[in-house]
Length: 195
Figure 1 (cartoon, helix red, strand yellow):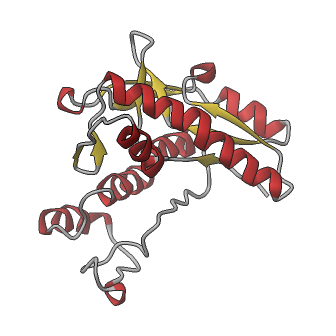
Figure 2 (cartoon, helix red, strand yellow):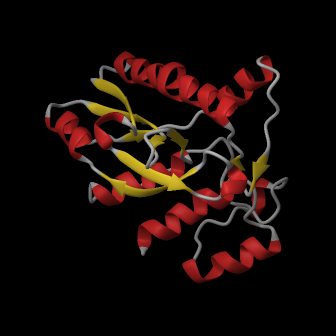
């Protein structure tokens, strides 16, 4: 059995930012990330959440090792859109470190933080980071987890779940608002993974 894990931490980041009296803003499901937000996000993702996920694997008898996208040059990125601040677009993936861990029998647990061209940390959407890493590792499957039932025509009605979706249907569903908020990056990374 082969595992690869890239985790997010949106709720935990929001909680810390609230305690620090830093207001969160989102554009198309992505957190606008200024320097203070990035510092908090890196602490939460690379520390609190990463180690909690590693511990969960250990409790199930699975050997895991926590790393971030900055370790070993795993994820290199550029600023996605200056309006989003320190949110990155992954430009390159060096899967050598996760491969070493996998070869040694460890599950790599990756915090979605990348290094920018200047060496500064950039916030990467976890689903996007997972997709880029899956492609670089030539994974056979990409599984994304979420705290909602899935993509629904009416988000308030679980019976409207869309069980299958063609890539060609995505633009219209975004335009209609069926795919919105945090589901936009999830669906986008699925589209990219199948191209």
